[in-house]
Length: 606
Image (cartoon, rainbow, N blue to C red; front, side):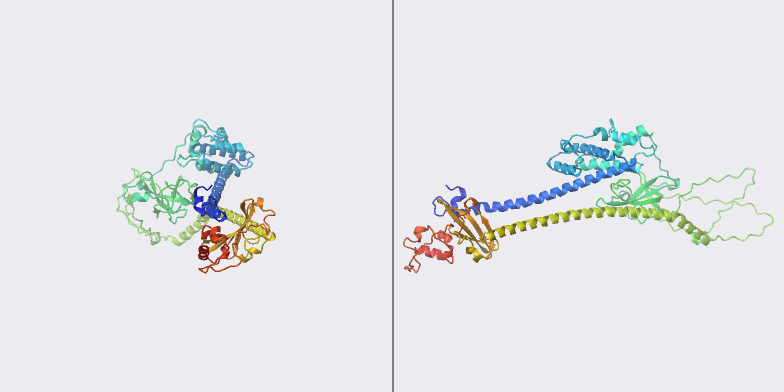
């Protein structure tokens, strides 16, 4: 009984599908589905490969963060045997605490599995199961809260000297920052981040040290800014450089007095050097103040001394070369001394070598110091001869100043420059290492793909050689040699158009009872065998040898004669008794006719 679309291919209406009819129905019903399955398989394989790469990168980054925490702890305490396990306990607490903000779905479990595999065999399977179940691990070790301070932090801080306060000790700050980065890497994007340095600060203030008053900024009276003008607001609110992509920033530290605390500012691309005096905005009103550059360095956003998006920029260079000394009030003359006759101010013309260039215009008005008043004693009755003026050896003084600069200033500048070069070199080395890792991964993937392709080629060649050795049709065999194999002539041949070319399908069948079973199918293209496939292997064995292949009986007369229309008579019974339509005649006997039109003529002639 036929079902559904099978009825469309039953041309003779006998309720059955013959070989050719069944072949056409199967290609119609399942041909597109087979191609779709292959497309879905390739897409699934590509997606799985991409997923595995993402998981590998995720695990590598987590491993880097934990290794940084271990390094920071070693810098704080020195080398100790238990540092690795203590660092891992702290990391597991931080990760499990961050997962409380996440929905641990199938994708997150995949990433956690990659992280767990990265640290095999250190971590047990139960650790992975606990993370997937969102259990908080080692809270008594790593927790920092108002009610509890974990044993890791308590023991660490209690063993540090008081002067290594949070925010002032680089190693401790690095450990806290790396711990914060690990937490924020696992938290949900919508959940607030955490800063462990701020979380632990109350413990320091209450237990370790008394509150330290912050050093108040000092403003000189002569540098008090006036009313700020409107155009400067956009300059003070300048954002981070565009196109930076969260990369590296150039900071400088500015000192407002000798021995004062330095403050971090973004250089904004200005060509600065250590020792230069600059104008920077200070305070809520962004008052312009002069300071001296003490350090210049390049760092990432994570390592910046102050968040780059909140940091202020250096306005411009100042012509100042030293800090202004505080004025000493003039000493009043003694009462018993004679009153001196006041004289008008004496203008003193400065030498050309000492001329100071004009300062750029500023939006604040600086107070102009009053000119000093000189008082001379009254002239004596007998004038003394004037002594000749001594010339100041400006050349000698300039040489001495240059020598002092070379002796005292150049070495620190060279050290600072060398430090900056080392920092940049380290950053470039890290980026180079990352690029090399990516290249190695890509090369490994390419080699694996080539190996898989080579295996497929070898398997295909082995199948071809097996068919050749068995004297069966094989891919690549010329079209005209098909009948020379042990299978002999095919039971039936069909054809169809593919991409503008005629492709033939040869089917060898054997009869088992009342049924015909295909045992070998060959497709050809461009007069060459494209595919060769064995079917129904349970009937193959010895029955598939030459002589057991079923062939359609040829209905050719023993004595051909021409009928009235000139056609050939194929026996006394006629073709119409054997075939219901000319299409079946042509499909079952394609070798008899040049084309389907000739089969039509033959069938019409009977």
